Image 1 (cartoon, helix red, strand yellow):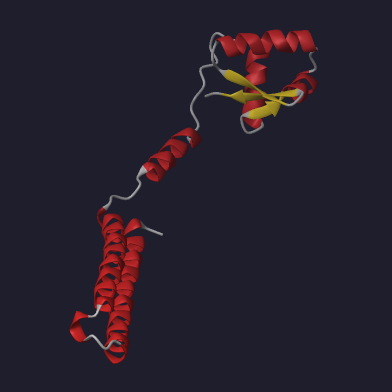
Image 2 (image 1 turned 60 degrees about the vertical axis):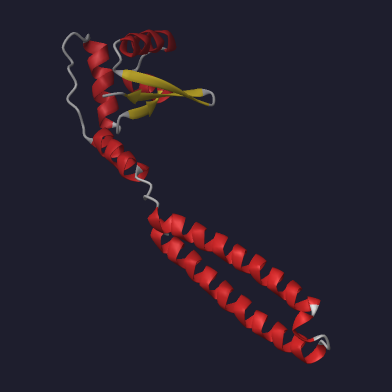
Length: 161
């Protein structure tokens, strides 16, 4: 729900509280006027007034909270996050110049597999051993083309660009 809608809802609750307090106040005054023999100087009228003021103060606080929500600004971070996500989704051209044959093959393989793959799967598809794969990934990570993320006992190799 938007802040403004919540604010109007809270203000409506505050108005309902005021109406209930006033109805209760009238009912209590009727009961006291029928039962108290002292007339207008009866101390019960004072206690009714105190209870009424306290109740109206609480309703006023609820009303202030509602007005705060009505006039407060909306949270804009969601919009900013969607812009960041859209920028990440745009495919960027990779400069494969300066890469050797195995590095190019690995980058192309990652691009075909939605820019991410388990390290073990990469080793199998490229038909290379563990040591060669580690050295190859180290070089590409140093060039900031890939990133390795630990997932349990496996690494996921993610294409950065």
